[in-house]
Length: 372
Figure 1 (cartoon, one colour):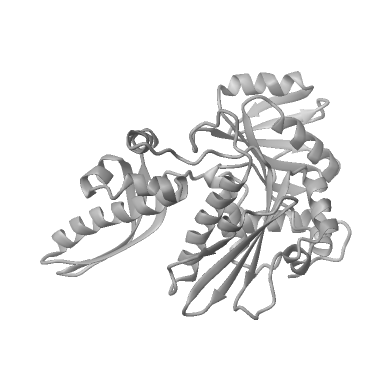
Figure 2 (cartoon, rainbow, N blue to C red):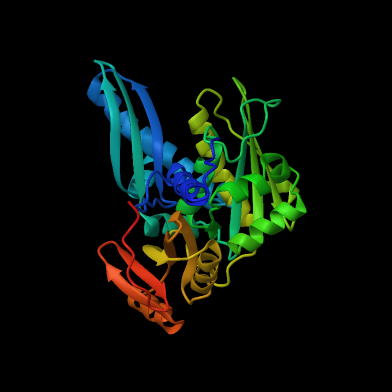
């Protein structure tokens, strides 16, 4: 990982690069627990039309299995049993197709399937099960990756494929508030991969204090080429329950698919291990709002972040991008946006709505242009 030496570019530049690597840009791109992407289908039949129809139904069933595995516990999945293809289709709101290929008797494609949240919850609750409740604990996720069991660990490295997948999945699922480290020079030097894996108390406490979080979860993904990927979860300051600490992926020939599958299950395990929210709403039942906050230092942002998290209806605050004078973030909230705007105003922040985002300024400082 390359880090600039110049004082003027180090923290701000590394922060922006790190967040762009995690999220692919500044603009919020939110998914939810009821959308399943990357569903691959490959079906042979008597004709191309029959193969496509069978692939459609098979893809929806496969997507349902992946979705239900991320929003329910093992015990509840046993209660649900296996729905028919018609039952699954009744819960689908829409889908999209990519990379279609067909012959006279074969159909191959990738699908993204969107499920109707209300219909899924009705199906689940009618069978005596429920979706997993979220946690109120703000979590710092550290995704450590090993290319092989004996390979050196990667954490902040640009070549680490696991950390961005894990964070994106946690943010999109919305099961608990996520604090995303900047990955700047201070983070890199203070918490190298080795200290993360050992849950070094000084390094962990420094992260918790810097980002105003409640816990740090280290998810170590070790790849065994040809055999699959294993993930070990550890948590600070409270330990991760042993029953939730080890995960294996059944996918052995597609690293991205394996990491995506493991990220979904890791996020579910972390949520189950956290402190449940009082009166927690159904997952996915909140909105997201992009905000722009002028700052003079990271400590300014931490104070703003903590203030926003304490407001009624706010589920979490996620850092999106940063430079030395401004932070872009997203507020996860439930309820009326006007009520949120008024609540922000009552704590002394000036709110100015713009097209696609709000500017939130403590003390009414001049407007700052969006990050480019």
